[in-house]
Image (cartoon, rainbow, N blue to C red; front, side, top):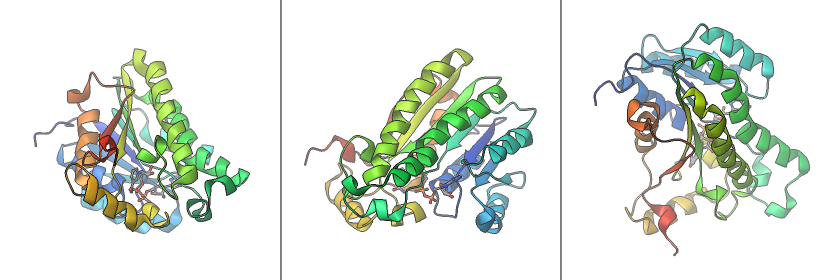
Length: 255
Ligand code: NAD
């Protein structure tokens, strides 16, 4: 492609390993000439993510940021000073494994709050922290899933969290629009990643999509990543508050 993000600085939150959607997005952003800062959750991921950053580009930086720790978010803002920051990709979610296998009605209060904090509130916290650095306007993109609007077996509390995330996208888009900051979500089809493996019977979801999606196949992470490039680039300048489905068309199907 053609340097769609040349001269832009992009922050990508949520790289755990080479299968992470955040890493696929990093590869597409690097290809398009972005200056990259990627984040990982904790010390355990540091070595892997340092190596992945070096593979993305010689100038890419990897910084630790657990989004439930305000001091780590503040340190991330400091590391990005003086800006400007042009793009933020939020690719973070978490729910307790037991809440992704037992009936939804058995979700615990703690499990509910944890999933909502990490998977939805964190977008609000990150947007509030990063918007002041986005002095030339910009784009915030998060990752969501069909389970926000339909019942997907075992997705449970994560579906509720994604519904809150998608509503947050709309409210943030309205708040930040006057600063020319656009906020959108990509609803990705199922992809085998570390998080996805935590969902009971996830391989059945993959099989169902391959059998019934209009394109009769699953989603390639690079397709999600290239849509993130579109949203972060000038090409996406008129798009905000949206959920863009990159799912081989699966969401249009009734049966
Ligand atoms: P992943 O496990 O590679 O990424 C999830 C990331 O969230 C990890 O890097 C993890 O460390 C991070 N994270 C969890 N808690 C955190 C915290 N407290 N602070 C900071 N980071 C934290 O899996 P993925 O599938 O690439 O997930 C990325 C995003 O894509 C998630 O929002 C997920 O819900 C979404 N998504 C995934 C799929 C799929 O099928 N894989 C489909 C649609 C949407």
